[in-house]
Image 1 (cartoon, rainbow, N blue to C red):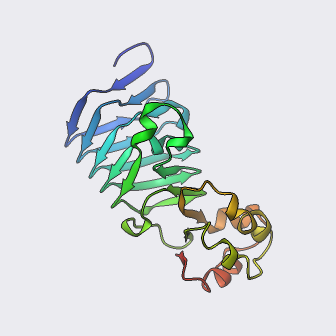
Image 2 (cartoon, one colour; image 1 turned 45 degrees about the horizontal axis):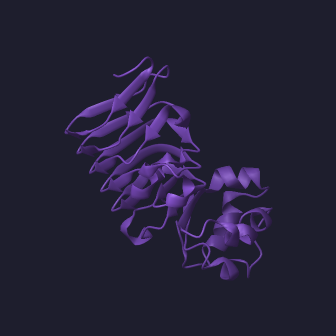
Length: 210
């Protein structure tokens, strides 16, 4: 610990440990110059208390015990061979240096990671190869290369407001977006449809995995 209310992990390598980031009165700063290997990280804090600054995670497991919402700082981390469990909403992963001028964001990456035990909603993969990743199965679904497939996806009628709100706006996603994962029950409730109605259309497209 370094500083009142802060836990700072930097300039070292941590291996084969269980790290509990669960004290909601603290801010956790991971990086710079931090490498974490073969560790389990238990997260039970909000996004505004978790800071990743160029940290490298290799073969780690992230156990998200409290829904992690709108945490774009994953794009300031290098993730290789990691596993995710728990609820992730509005999170971005991968390489997106334009997101921030801070130096850590130049090092963001993701490969060979497994999200099959996670619930992802409105999460994106940035400038990384989705074929190296394992996405959660239905009721989650993942649109691969959403910008490249935007015209194809607009060619059919989608239920509720999903077409107008999501599909018609795919071309406005950041240019580095290579995949986008939604949680069907959550987005269906927001946009006036049902998971079953969504799936009936999703099944028509090879660019959507579920």
